[in-house]
Each structure stands twice: as C-alpha cells, then as structure tokens.
Image (cartoon, rainbow over all chains, first blue to last red; front, side, top):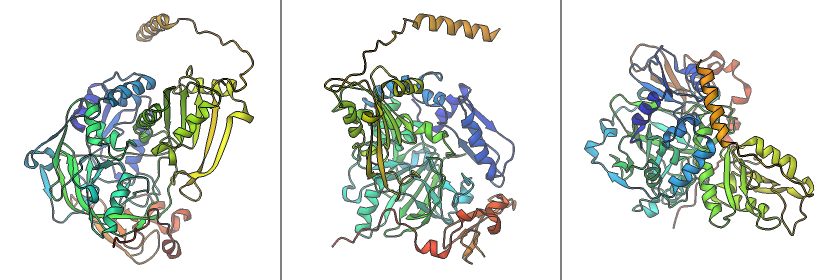
Length: 475
Length: 75
C-alpha cells in the first residue's frame, strides 16, 4: 500500500491527519510538548516540525502512528474504523505471509542518495531531542534495527528487524538496550562468544507497516520484511547496506551502519519507558556508527513516549494482539479475539468459549506460555465469546456479573516478569494474575439460572440515527 | 568539565549547532554517558537543581545491574 514513509505521510495529509509546524523551535522542551499534544487530541494527527533551531532544512516527524485513525489508514481502512474491525482486518492480512521481497541495486536505492563516512557526528547530522525530561540523553525510539545471526548468516528469515531504544553516547557511539528475550540479544550473544563485532543497520523513517512489524513479537525464524510485504500488499523493496551484508529498506529516510562492540557493557538510561515510568540506569551494549546514508531532504521520524496513552500504545496495540491470537488459536480454537493493547500486553483480555469447566483458566496459562506472554502478560482477564474484549464497558459488565472471587481469581507467584514493569522486583521477575470472567460450564457449578436480556436487532436504526445526527450537526 | 549528573570531571563538548549559528552546544560525560544541550531547562542542566533521584554517584556506577551478561568465550 505504502512504499515508504513519504507515501504514507502524503496519504495522512490528504485525509487531514497530518499537520506542519513551521515556527522556529528549540528541540527541548518543545518537541516533547508537541508530541504529547498531538497524541492527546481525538484522532491525533501526525506532525512534521520544519524549523528547528541550529538544524536548518531538517525535519522531525512525530505521531505518525499516533491514533486509531492513522492505524486504520495504514491498513487501507477508513479513518473512523473501529479497533475491533481493525483487529479482524489484521488477522486477514496476517495470513498472507510471506509477502514478496525485491532487491534494488545499491547505487539506485534512494536511501543511499547521500553517503557520509567521515567526521560522523550523530547529533549534528540528525535533529535529535531529549524525549522525556529525565532521560539520560538523546534517544532513537522508533528505529527498525537490522542484524543477522552470525551462526546462521546466510538465512534471510532469521535476519532480525526490531525496535530497541538507543542512546547517543558520543559523536559516533550509541548504547542499545537488548533484553534477554529480544531476538537481537541472541545475535549479540553468538557474536560475543566468538569475540567478534556484530554488524548493525539502524533504519529510520521506513514505511509505516515495517515500523509496525519491527515492534511485533513474531517467531524468531519469521521475516519482518516478508510480513511487512504481506500486510502492505506490495513487495518490500530492499537494498544491501554499504559496509556489511545486511539488507535494509531501499526507501528508508536514514540508515546508520555500524558494529556492536563485542563484550562491552556501558551505563545506559534512564529512559521514560512504555509503562509510563522511567527505567533505571543499567549496563547495556554499545555500537559504533561507521557510515550514515540518507535520502535527499531526509525526514527524521522519532516517537514521543509519555504516560499512557501515547503513540507507542497505538503502535504496539494491535501488533501485540494479533500474534498472541494466532499462537493461541492454533491449539485453542474456542478463542474469539485477544485485546492485549495495554502496555504491550502487561494487561490482556481474551474472549473465549469454555469447552468444559475451568477451560478458560487453561487459556490464560496458554497465553502465559506464548513467547511474548511469558514475560509480558501479567494481568490476564478471560471473558466469554459474547463479550467484545475491545469494549471495556462490556468487559467490566462481565467482571461484575460472572466472577466468583473465591473460584475465579488466581495469582501465580514468582514467574518471569517484564523488567521495565515497575512492579517487577527484582527486575525480570513477576507473577500472573488471572481473572476468569467467563460463564462457568459443566462440570463446574453453573451460575444461578439467569436469563440474559436479548439485544434487539438495532443495526438498521444505528445507521439511520448516525446519518440523522450527522445531518443535524451540519446544519 | 563537570558532568551535571555524576559530577565527575569527565564531560566535554561533543557537538554544536551544525549551521554554526551558535544556537546551542552539546556535552557528554565519558564516565556515565549523560549528555545535555546548553539550552535545556535549568533544572535539567544544573546539578544543584536536578532531581536527586536522577543523579548517579560513583558507587551507583560501580554497582549497575547487567541485564544481559557477557557470555563465556567459545573454546
């Protein structure tokens, strides 16, 4: 659908979902104020900041994925499509994997229009900014980071594209947070066991679906590039990096090529993270940038992340739900829908049928044993197939009318946890909290005989009344 | 130059506004990796005004947690 970031920005602008700020601003604190404001508005637009003091001609793009309107447009739907309908559209597109990948000659790839190998200075070449006030420095928060497994170098599918936070630590030095369960950590470990540097390509300003896939927890041997092509419905156009054997998006705005330094750990953080709080300072990996390539008149896309909800919650909302749904559905066909939009699945709601008594609790255990769910899914709420898990009023009704606290609430202590969750103590440990709000089925004791109120067939009048309301508001 | 976070004399200028306008300069600490711009809010770039929670002592730096340990070398 969109070959690159520019195609998508043009679509957003055409739909009234992109605005430009042309007044001269200083990077701090103004860029974070703009990021917060854009995402707080109903159907918040993307914002392009065009006049940054000291950086003439450079542009920053914020909030590109920062509303359901923008996510809907990204997958070819109307901007007023409901979240539930977007979820089912993603399920449909997901099954088109693998999509096609095409290679463009290095010399013809737009991302190589400008090549810089000498006197690299990241914060002079890119209009970087401190995202949150107490961050340790200037961070990249929305990059698609490419690495290969040194033990499986020829395998296109295990080449990883992921989003990791990265802190500028010098003219050409950058810290990177690679947590144990991240695919890139596996690559770093394999390189470090051999004391070898690991080539890395940091791609900034790529097509919106690749950014979406780079933060999606898919299987280790599934290709983010082929997934992006499948969802986009057009081939993914790649080219070879200039200094190593990595494949990078040919239409990226910027590509930073470098090497992760083996067996090095340096102080990194704090950084205002997705749970809405600052991480601590910890020892993390570091890489050196050897080459920067970019398009002419490049756009620096980065992400403001504050107390939820901000852009990252929209970006990681449905891409957390879909793989969890797919992985669970394989063995548990009763599952109807998964809403794991809350802080990357720290809280998740599953709508499922109860095949027999207690079954929904097994659905929770299945969620807690998916690759993503092991660390992330902490609070798991089960609702019946008649409840829309994206409709929180319905979910609350289900808790009110179907939960027997003594039987349906379970805490499993001392399980893996997500280190950035402020309740994870020590960082990396956690617990599972399960609420079964499905209707009990035999042989469980069924609830008192209650007769639910049937909903009348109201769809026809919904449309009529909506049209009348629209006409009334246009008067 | 003194780092505004760890207070060691290990910071230095590493960048300036690329249009040479003098609009801003940036500094970085080689010990704790904190970086800042001279045009930021006073309570971010002045040690006495910063929130104590976000300062680092040498003892803190010596005891930082490693999230992913360096693996043993292959034989």
